[in-house]
Image 1 (cartoon, helix red, strand yellow):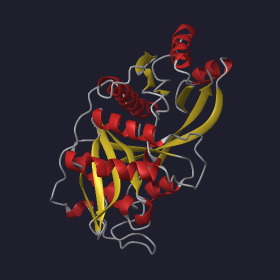
Image 2: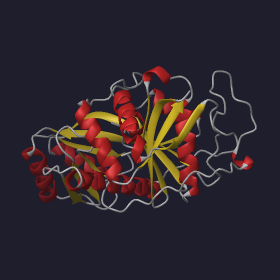
Image 3: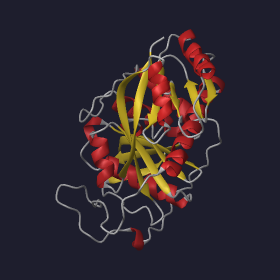
Length: 329
């Protein structure tokens, strides 16, 4: 499941995540667009800034993004084992990527990051396939279109089949995060005191997914989603909570990893949709991540989804697609 549809962006292992600094109270006017919002847009929102060139993604940038994804998956699977006591969890390094398993039904059960550090040999693939099969789980590989093409050929020869796609979008942060607060929406860091409120809103919103675009091939039980969110938190993502008229309206998360700003999920409660909650959560995260020194923000969405349309309207460009290949146990 892609990141701001939940996940992905998100979505992971091994290396220590760098923290995102507290929001800065001083909003620099140079980061704000003076062009008025177009009709139908929430207040404070503008289209892709006309002076911002589209972000080009070559193999070097794709490798950075996939490395960040690999770290997040590895860290989340390790968190499932060490913090949640999931004894079946594992994170197996695989040709520069990782095979991660965080428990039955977890969205983190996948192979990520292949294609930028060589081709895995058959022995390594057999080890990974055996580990998933012992847990009764399929092997799901999310493979970038900028990865070594030989990997796709090797996987299909081993019986992997194409089941879906997900899109990776990015935005250059070197010119500032842009955007502005949305009137009526208050966004702040989620604290330990309001963790359960944050968890409830993201899990509830996950049960009402984006119905536009290419449908996701995955469905997750509520408990698996809640466990995955706890694993995310233990892995070091920063949580955000949005309130509208004093009520919890949405939640989101993000992490900074070697200059890559990963937007690792955002959700709006059904009763508060179409009021700019997603826009406010996006603006807050981009501001913090730019302040942390990130030069590129990335998010993963289902192709053609409302989430993809939302982030493209806010200056994100399609960088590449991941093919989702699955081998049943």
